[in-house]
Length: 302
Image 1: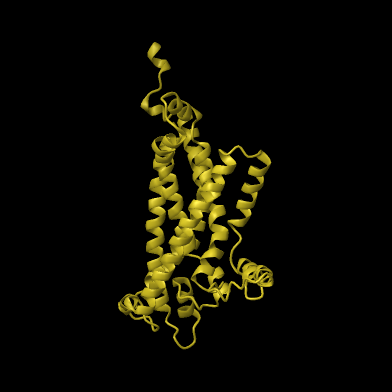
Image 2: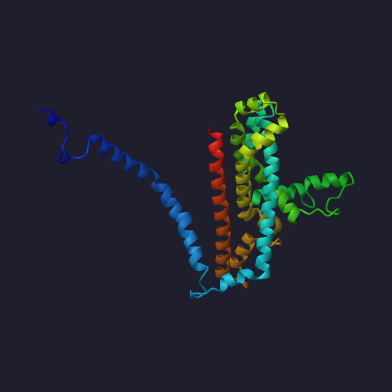
């Protein structure tokens, strides 16, 4: 009969469904290393920090570590860290956007664009002790640029500049902040459709009006998201600040390091509590960045 050609419930699932199940299993096996890596190097350490922030040296439960976060030294460390992070994020956003605009929409040769993007990829990851040494050799008290300026009668240190101050640390951070901005904002600039500019010009808009009413509102979520990402990038930096200033600037990462490896004032519980505070700030920053990136992608994909 004709009905014999149709599968009955007893025949089991179609063969295509079985293949789909095997494919799903292979897909999960493919991402298993990522989840294991995240568990070992992200979730487990964060859980250890959170538990340790509620313990004393002998393992007893306490809330004293979080009460100590109101100490003036701790408040000053968070304040300075936020100031350095915001100042370098804002400067990196402005300077990096101008560079990205110049090589993307400014009509510069493709060779310059490729060279700048290559440099940005290297410089955005050049930090820590090598970066601190490079700036000391360049703008330290006997650095190359410092000596050259002194030979022409300009002593920058006598005029108030110091590489080992807030301004010097911010300048050093800018070396890896603005290349990161270039790498992130370049795809957003390339996503601006030519039809949008042509439509604005056909309607009589000037270049300034196009950027004010069309391009800038589209790029605003990307700009704000990148600003937040640069803020988080600078907020968690430790090696560069410590190698450059030797811990003379009171920053949260340096204060955490002092609590973990100190001999006299050693208090790992306080260090864990400081780290939990940093994780909370970083989580808020990353969440805001993700939301802004989703909003910008909706425009750039249209």
